[in-house]
Structures are given as structure tokens and as C-alpha cells.
Length: 75
Image (cartoon, rainbow, N blue to C red; front, top):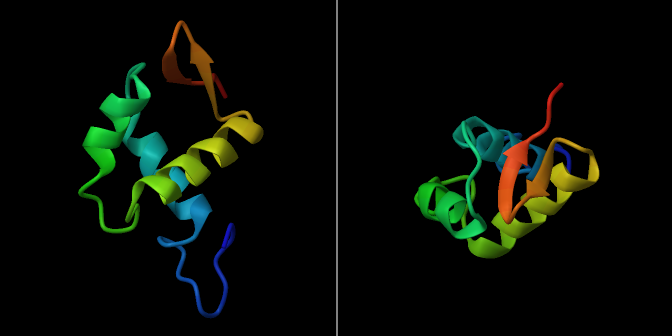
């Protein structure tokens, strides 16, 4: 579910959902603001997948929380 497989396409795996999340995170946003942007994206699907992808991105250091806002970390 984290990585694509023969049965799970790249855009539906959590890493693909995370890529979509990062693409929409051009500036710091609240969780609810980012969810509102992504809720209509077909590969995000539902709030549970959004949270799982957000957690994955936080664990690998791609995003962090600053002053209650989600921000991309510098690469």
C-alpha cells in the first residue's frame, strides 16, 4: 500500500498520494486547507488516505509542522 505493486498503481499507492500532496503544498497551509484542496483529487480518495500519506511524508522528513501549518522541508 505504501509503494506501487502489480495490483496497486503508482498514483494510488501512498507514495503517489504523497507526491500529489507535495505538488499542492506550494506554501504553508493548515491541515484542513490542504484537505480542501485535495479532496477532489481522484487518487487521494478519502481523508484516511490523506492522513496516511501525510504521516508518511512527515516520517521521511518531506514535510513538517511549524506554528500549526504544514510546510515542505528544504531539500
